[in-house]
Length: 267
Image 1 (cartoon, rainbow, N blue to C red):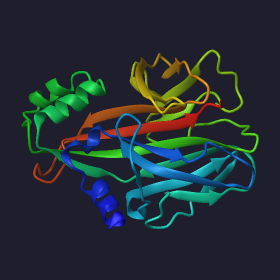
Image 2 (image 1 turned 90 degrees about the vertical axis):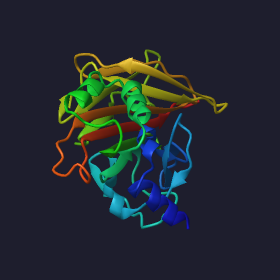
Image 3 (image 1 turned 135 degrees about the vertical axis):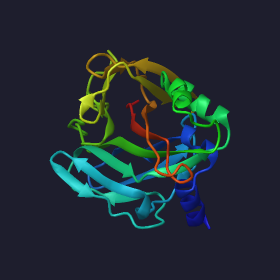
Image 4 (image 1 turned 60 degrees about the horizontal axis):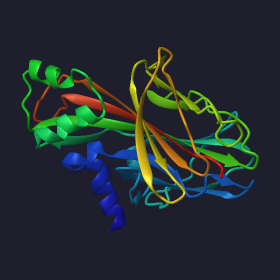
C-alpha cells in the first residue's frame, strides 16, 4: 500500500504538488568510516515532509560521488529509506539524484500564479497570456535534480559540478571549512552560471523550527548566506521555461527544473 501511494504521488501528482520541494534527507550527515549512509527522499513544504520509497522508473540517475569515485546507488524498488549503503573510503560524499519528468494539470489559476510569484519567474504570467493559454486545464512537466553532502570519517573534500541540467554547487565544505563568513553556493543552468536568480534557503534549527530566506545570485551565479551551528539547510533553485505542445490535451505548455542541496553544519 505504501509503495502504491509513493507511485501515485510521483507519477500522477495532484494539482498543487509542483509547489513542493524535493530533497535528499540523510538520517545522519556525518558518519564514521565504513558506517552505512541512510538517506530518505522527501517531498513537502517548509522543509517538513514524510519519506517516500525509491522507485527506479522515476529515477534517471542515483549515485554517490566520493572524490574521484562515482558509486551507483544499490537501492531497489520500494526501499525506504531510499538509500542504505556503506561506502568504502572517507571524505565528503555527494549524493546525486535526478528524477524523470513528472506531469501535472492546473485546475486552479491561483496555483500557477502562486508558484510563479513564489519562485520569482518574472514575466511568466504575461507570457502565458500572450501565448493565448487558458487559466485552467493546462499542463506542466517538471524534473528534480537533488544533491546532499555527507561527511564520511574526516569529511575532507569538495563538491563540484556534477553535470546536472540545473545544479546547486557548494563552494565550501560545511564539515571542514571556516563558515564564519557564510556559506557560498553557485547555481548552474545548462552548464553556465545562473545569474540574477532567486534561491531559497530553508534552515532547520536544533529545536526543529524552520525558517526560509531568499537570496539572489550575482554575475557569477553565486550567493552567500549566513549559517549557524548544528543547523540543517536546504538550498532550492527553480527554473521555468515554455514548451510548445503538439497536442494541448496531452502535452505540457510549461516545464520547470528544480535543484536542491542539503547539508548540516556541525554543532
